[in-house]
Amino acid sequence: MFSYYFDPTYVLVIIAFLLTLFASMGVKSTFSKYNDVRSSRGITAASAARQILDANGLQNIRIEHVSGDLTDHYSPNENVIRLSDSTYNSTSVAAIGVAAHECGHAVQHQVGYVPIKIRNGIVPIVNVCNMLSMPIFIIGLILGLGRLAMVGAILFGAVLVFQLVTLPTEINASRRAMKTLESMYLLEGDELTGARKTLTAAAMTYVAAVASTALQFLRLVLLANRRRD
Image (cartoon, helix red, strand yellow):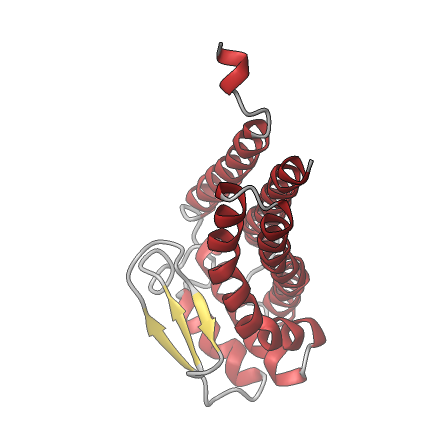
């Protein structure tokens, strides 16, 4: 009786969940470890970010404090980098690494980094596809219309495309951050190692997100194909 009702594609959901969970735990653990390591120069992450931006001619970009932990982000439309509670006033190598990473995104926009242009360009399309995908998919399943369900699955695939484009922008921002931290002597020696490990752990969350979405996409396709059969 159990085997009759059990959907084997749930295995993909479980794998996706575990990948995301382990990546999230990894970045929190790594950040926590290197958040206890103070930079020898004693500068705050906000100050480091200001120096990096000014050195790249980005004096027009503001730095603001935002609530939460690891909610740091760069908003190109508002010309502002927002650093979280765990980052803004911290002098740790982890916080400075995170701040430098966000500055890396600002520099990407300044130099016209192609992947970030593509990512920004497809955002409206991805938002529409994401909004429509699951309703169309579910209606297709309920009505037994495999082709309609497949349309929903394909629309969901736009999310995967977006994440695939996002991945290189995140990796590149981290590379820019590490080069800048070293060239401007904001961190040195083992401090750079700590910042690099923090950013690598953060990058793994994006890798996990891509893998998770790919598994979800595969599941939707399998379910839609089952209806078509």
